[in-house]
Amino acid sequence: MYATGARVTPGYSLSNRVVITNNILVKSVNGPAATIIQGQGPLGNGAVRCVFITNGIMDGFTLTNAFTLTSGDQWFDRSGGGSYALGGTLTNCTLSGNSASTYGGGMYGGTLYNCTLSGNSAFRTGGGACHGKLYNCTLTGNSAEEGGGVWGGTLNNCTVSGNSAAFYGGGALGDWYYSCTLNNCIVYYNTAPTSPNYFGSSLGYCTLTYCCTTPDPGGTGNITTDPAIGIAGPYRDEFPLCWKGLYHVCFGVDIDGEPWGFHRRSGATSQKRGL
Image (cartoon, rainbow, N blue to C red; front, side, top):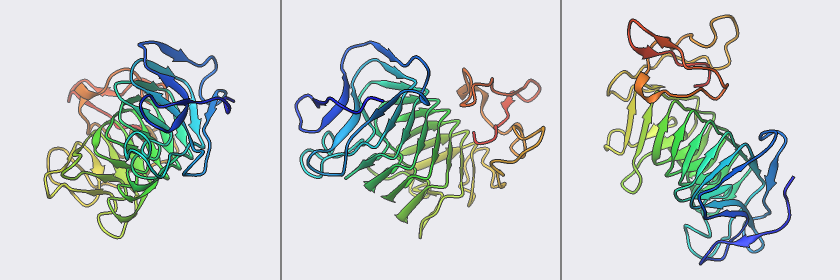
């Protein structure tokens, strides 16, 4: 548990447990369950973010209980509760229980691979994530006024479920400021008074391709079948989303550490449980 010490964001006011500006790899020994970086709250004076990263890679950490200021720069001081990444990458990390006073409760910017974002919140938009590139990630139980799961960015092979928004876009939000692109994703079981799963497709701000969601967003390869996330049994990894995805956006392993299924005849991927 790393819960002491802090360095101020270069050029701004919010403190961070870790600041990475060089092209280095910071890797835990035993993974996110055993290696935790803990921020400090509540929102406002005295808040501490977990990580500010502009270069390099963080691999295998849990980032939790981090908060932002309620004054100062709306991006560098008030966004990205768990992490604020500009050009940096997080892999195999868990971001949970973080909060931002404006955007991106779990993370703002950067690239995430095989990460879990849960229970994060933002006062404005992007409860889980804001304006990043996410691969093989899950976003659950996050909340915000708008875009409870994610605001803007690109998501490949991700699950966005059980998130909530006070107004619209409980799962994913795309707007004139940050467009949102989702490929091979499950966007289901999210809640909001308006557009509970996704918002912005009719305006051209949110594009879904080979996704499982409801209502039907149109576009290419999307289905509205209930994904039955959490289904048990010998075929749980392929039912009911068999061979619906885009193979060219799948690489490496999924969030369970298993190879992506590939249907050699159709050239498509099987969507796994929760992915």
